Structure formats: C-alpha cells, structure tokens
Length: 248
Image (cartoon, rainbow, N blue to C red; front, top):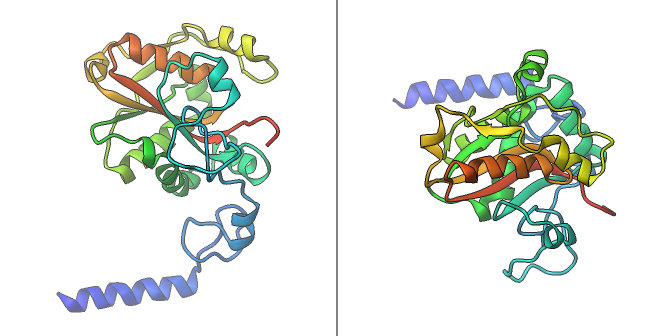
C-alpha cells in the first residue's frame, strides 16, 4: 500500500516541476494550483471584517458578533434572511468575475468555490439546499453555461450540501440590468423567476442558499428568493462572488 502512494507523490512532484502552479488571474507563478499569486491577492478586494448580515457589503467598525445592516438593507425589504459576498466588484475583483462570466474561464469556479465557502460559512445550515440564480434558456444557449450554477456547484461540493442546478427557471426573457436605476432593475425582473414545476417538492420546508455571481441592487436575488418562498421554502439566504458597494 505504501509503494503506490510513494509513486503517486513522486509523479505529482515531477509534474509540479514541469508545470508549476500559475496564478489564475495573471499567470505568474503561485504557491498552489488554482490560486492567486501574492501580488494579485493583494490587489483583489476580498471582503473581510464587519459586513452587512443581509448582503455581505463591508461596514465600518469592528465585528462583535452582532448582526449589522447596510443602509440599503435597512431601507429595502429583502425577502431573504442572510447573505455574504466574497469580493467587491471593482479592480481585480471585477476582472475575475468578467473572466468567468464572459471569458470562458471556467477554471475560476474552483477557487471561487473555496472563497465562497469561507465567506458563506457563518450563514450555512446543515440541511441547506444550494441552487443558482437561473439564466433564461436563450441566454444559456448563447453562453453555453450558467456561471452562477458553476459557483453553486463548487460551493455545495466543498460544503457537503445538496445541490439542485435547475431548482428555478426564468419564466420570461429579461433585458440586461446594466444602466438601469434601482426601480428599473426591480421592475425588469419582477415575476421573471419561478420554481421549476418538477422541483417544488424539493423546496417545501427547506432552508435554501441562492448563489449568484454579482449583486448590485439585489433585484434578481429578490425575485429568486420570492419564487422560493412562494413555493414553500422555510428560509432563503444568498451568497455572491461579488458585491457592488457604494463608495467602495
């Protein structure tokens, strides 16, 4: 039994010499596979410290264990309970999100899953069902993948939680949210997301975690959370790879 393990370790060492780990952002040498080099890690705006317990945006002050909320989450009635985000959507954080979403960098889902796990750990429940925010079938056909589904699958695998990639569906095609104000974003996705008719039984009475790539106003996540609650979910929480934050 020991000899095969030694051989595998030797092969892995040889491969590491031939193909050293590279930074998933810039391609420079990194300490481990699917990681960031030191420079890119410093330039990536990871969220840490005190955060809004409902959307994950960073807040001033020290984390003393009490739930705190940002101005948006105090003003808006969020249909979900708790939320976390990994990155601020700017600088290298924006670059990584766009590379995954539009640059066919599917390899980024693996490190992003690790980052999501670290960020979302405080809000995870043992029996949670993890699901992505869905794409309309026409957009999915053009893009060939749903980046949110890649993220939710990676997170669920690491967390050891059940995953359902088609729990929700886009009932109608919506235009891009880019350039719309808050009210316009909510109006654009109102009623656009529904529970998959053959998955409703998996929603009833469950604690759900919805995963998306970016949260701006929260309109899309709100539409998805409303669909889950309407299908009988016990509670909904959210996790996103990036958060657009004011003055950040």
